[in-house]
Amino acid sequence: MNFFSLIRIEAKKLRRSKILWFLAAAAFLLWLPSVLNSHLNFEMQAEGISPEHNFLIQGLLGMSWFLFPAGMVVSTVLLNLTEEMNHGILKMLALPVRPARLCLAKFVILAVLAAIQILISVGMYYAGGAIASYTQDYPLLLPPLFVLREAGLIYLAAIPMLSIFWLLSVCIRTPIFSIGVGLASIVPSVLIINTKAWFVYPCSYPLFVITAEYGKLAANLNTAPVELVPWLPAAAGITLLCLFISCLCFGRGR
Image (cartoon, rainbow, N blue to C red):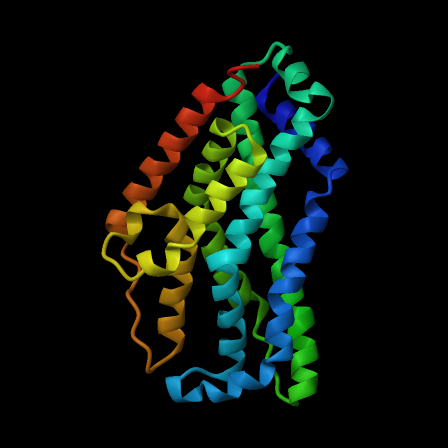
């Protein structure tokens, strides 16, 4: 069984699960406060940022710091729980396929889930932004290309973080402990992005990238820029290491 066949099998399992409903609910909760408090965007002009840019960036900050990482933590555990039901993981491991290949196929599905959550959040942004624009009598929506660019930055920055969460779910078989450790790893991000060693902590990558974008949009706000070196080498090394260990540990004990 080749790698793409495994991905198709995992995608079919995904369609039968309730993970997508969970991601949609998280995206709804993300933009609900932004819509209810849309009038506050007009109070940020002293920072040199327009109301429409502030509406987007504040939502993305909330998403990149907690809701998106938390959604991925829960998604990794739910992916594993779908296999535990009816001993599905044992059936998969009994197939003539290497456990490492199955592990990577599941990580690809996790990356797809991350993309889906971000795209749902973009859709919710436009739905919420349309409502806020109507209530405030001001156009708060930005062009799709700009919004997708910002969302794409979050996604690319999140891949090393996903490898960390996947490693945790593989190595910690108790769901509640896996979720607890994953959620606990998110909280320090808001502090770590203010240090020079932010690039060694993948859970802070999405928040750091969006904070840097915030600094570009707000003329009177100073934020640290994204320096590709040493960030990219560190991110690549951490991702490969986490996936390597995940492949070694996947399926052991079963």
